[in-house]
Image (cartoon, rainbow, N blue to C red; front, side, top):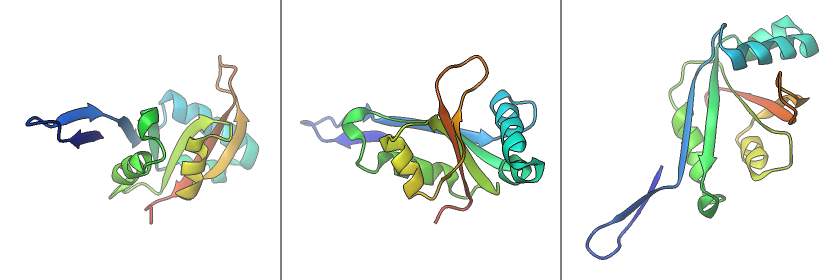
Length: 134
């Protein structure tokens, strides 16, 4: 997402955030790791309901000067618009951050908390919500 504001005769353009996602599928590392952990915690049926046909929001980043101004929300809404998957899922640091607040305000709920990816040490929350977004 870009911020374009007039500066003299030539508008200034700067990147203020980026985001991407894709349909998750068996054989993808994040998908397989999270599916296995969710199945162990909540059962295979629950895990498949969330991850069996899911849009995985892989990266969502907003420049600090633009956080809290609707940029992240707009990127998530744009990415999820018209998706055919049943759910949207993501991982984020398991801390009370602005990102966690944003995801909750969009209806994402925690599926796993205090989750540590293999080889890692930081705690993450795995969150999901049914699609479409309102």
